[in-house]
Length: 203
Image (cartoon, rainbow, N blue to C red; front, side, top):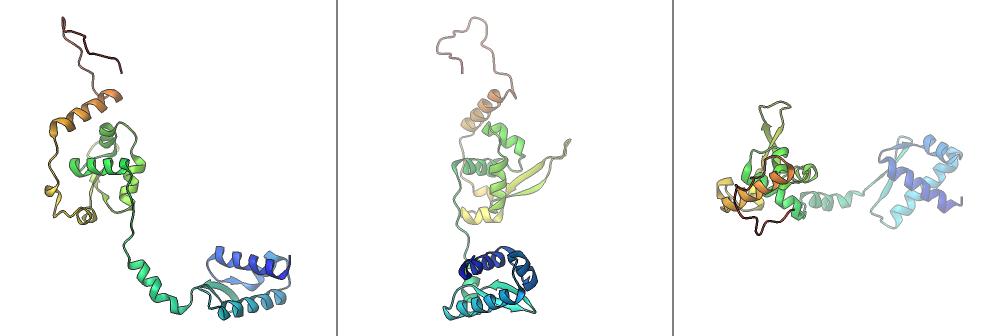
């Protein structure tokens, strides 16, 4: 490797490790003499300083580490304070609606209504702070109960869950019954004797 390639490898080592790395370890990884590696590191430190790079290399008691320059701290702090923007998929929004209106609710109940597994959707909602664990059901296995969070109320401009818009209960129950029938949770009503089969089609 030429000098620039070696410098590139050193940067990769320091970036990947994320902490101070001893000169001897770097030298062993490169199969080079420590004095040669130190000369290259000193050059790299000067080069980063000269071009006022957003990444600096510093020496700490014989070890080297990548870091950001002090003049960048103010902007990094600003960035951390900016609320994260995130988009929810239709599936996640549907799951959030179920949690909001049925809380406290278990994953199994959510899956009964949706008709599909909902682990990923629920976990994502917990991850972004819109849903949370609110307890456990007093049943075998102690399944986790989920509910919405204060962040959910803030995001949707609600004082509390009582401010949620009213939904058509009949349609919601019909949808739930449909999903449960498809999954075999409830038996589908059989037509009474003598009833017409017109308009009935198999799924």
